Image (cartoon, rainbow, N blue to C red):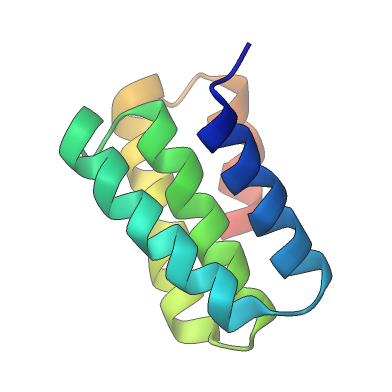
Amino acid sequence: MLPRPIIARTVLLQALLNGGKFEEAEQVYTVNLAAKTRKFGRDHVATLMVAMNLGTAMKEKGDFARAEAIFTENYEAKVRVLGTRCVRIVTLSWLVA
């Protein structure tokens, strides 16, 4: 079972996104990304997941240039970590192209 603070943060972020509060979600994801990067490093799967969520929040609020930069960096990191033959990478490759 996940610790309560993680569950609470996940519920908060989902509520912010569902409520169209993308700026607030972006702020929380930015803090989470910094914490995950410090704890696990840039290429850890948990860090990459938060980065993808941050990119999604940016995309939803209309900040397409920053979202694209995050998505591209995320894709490149996943290729480094998982390799090009991973199903996730093959699926992502047509989304990024």
